Length: 178
Image (tube, rainbow, N blue to C red; front, side, top):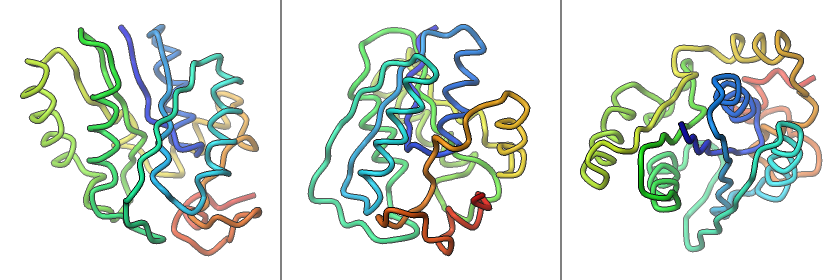
């Protein structure tokens, strides 16, 4: 099965890539630059992760999006639809690294069901969207990273665009940056 994983350079996307590779899927990664403050650092991390896991990384740049720290209204919907637009027709899946414990509206089972309905409209059910980490907490994800000896240090999960993680945004707080 072909799997396209949306990557941000963070722990969740690294675990998602590793998970599908462990299932022997043909895995590729997609990074979307939508003007987020941390995009340069995230892309560097995404490249390092893709290289480490021997996964092809593609990038898309989107302009004109209003971005602020914290929740970006419609972000995961936009990412999911851009991913759908970038795949070849045929049976495959697209994966997001969303997980439980998040307060974002687009990190829920209901959101994923709605996105699958949209995918079905466009692909007659030939492309699935999955969120294999949706039942996991950030602690579970960190445990997975440690259990599988994944390179925690290659990831970047800070929403701010500073050279060092800010330590105060939601992403830094969840990760418990070391």
